[in-house]
Image (cartoon, rainbow, N blue to C red):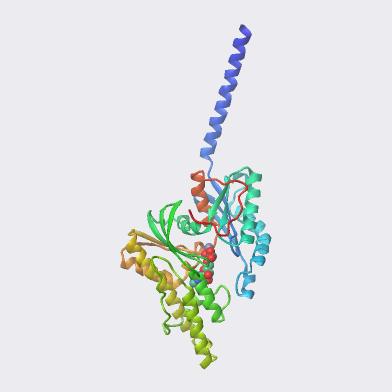
Length: 365
Ligand code: KG4
Ligand code: ZN
């Protein structure tokens, strides 16, 4: 009898100690910062970033200038470059953030959309890291991340807001209801705005990606040539007709004067840029009428364009809307935007299986 009472007492003691240990672990977990290691490799930039409690500690990137000589991204070359760059870039992000591997709470990775070979490098690397560190893996949609890049800074839009997302592969108008709740209201039916810049620039003989070059040269030119605005219903876009009209125009002019492009480069850049910005702002105007909001945001690589930033700001002023334009480092592809999205998914405990595979045509839910 005496012995069994003693055993019960011992069991209770161990149970209590285990309970205290678990409580202590929970408390430690609560005190510990959420540190997300984020990796981006959807196209030709290898990015790594460390986000602590939603704040950017580091945002490192290795750009692949090698594609300039081909006039566009060569997928095979891009994936090989990611293989070369991923370890040094992740190392640099961790070093810059001043953390150690043991501090990482989760690994966030771009699942898509993007180039399969490029995505594979990042996804495989992230899976291996999550597995080794025994932390959750978080899959991120690249376009959702472009929008959430706005939450990497202090100046954050309020929900709901409309976002004009313009990159090399996408052109969308998105109604952002919450960090993880977005509805695409309209998108391009063919080429993206960034593609229109890059392809028109290629016709002008500019290096890839031509967007930033057109932006620079356009500042020295003026509006001299008119290109037709496509008549696309709803909130959708189309840039393929625009691209063809630029091509036919240049072919016609070059027939009469083979120095036409060379002699009018700045004005051509200005006129092409004007037309693309006009198409984008006109659709935004329609979107704001159909979906009244108080805040509007710009996102994606083309949001670095000076004329678009200016037109967007003016549009906001005219319509009494609060305007949000990303800092330059968050316009084009970067891993901080993946980490910020990863942070919100981490808070929502939205984790992925370790057997996920990249999805080049990943749909935004
Ligand atoms: O978002 P991003 O870095 O990559 C994709 O997700 O596609 O966007 C790249 C695109 C390219 O088409 C590039 O020409 C364009 O953004 N871009 C610009 C400017 N800076 C980048 N387009 C016009 N003006 C710029 N300043
Ligand atoms: Zn992008």
